[in-house]
Image (cartoon, rainbow, N blue to C red; front, side):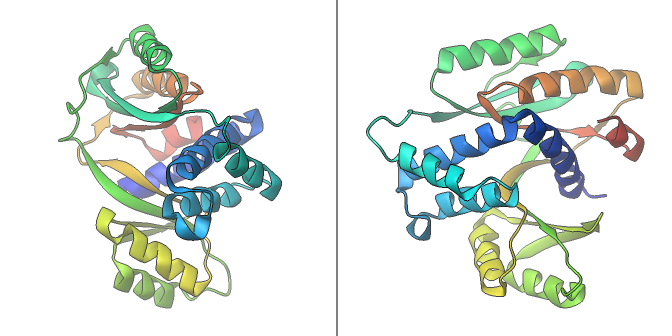
Length: 247
């Protein structure tokens, strides 16, 4: 399975667990909030908000919750989140890239550094992992019986898709950042809703570990993902099918 497809499969499994704990909705609401605050509360005129709303719907967030998040974000008492990133290494040289939305940078950097230190990793300087990750647009689409896979794939390639992988009934599409909007528009024209669409950091080098060491690294990743200030965690850990089941 290709890197972006494997990441999307893991994300779905992780998303199901996060949803049960209520954490997924917290992260989705934060993304809606910052998108609405920066670009306005109308999804039709705000591409980032439109994407955030689509992802929220794809994860079964109630419409009322989405509306309240937009209304609150565009009001005078809106919480002031800003974006920040952190880069570091877990044990055994596994690269870890952390994207955050926070209202308190001091709290966030302290908690992120603490997670790295507690689990044997180290926080590095911004830019230190640029050579490891490529920035790509990634779409995860649940294929239905009425969709012609070949015809749909050709439509996506025409719109700018670089790679497509079908796994567990989901078609994962990756593209260059410059083609992200084009694919999003094509999906809207076709009336197809992506379960998830986002910019991801896809590793171009991978680290393979045995199960014991794999477990130690994933404890760091889990600790970071459980942090309310953390939106996404990317890494270059190569995960086998058997290890995916351990997740």
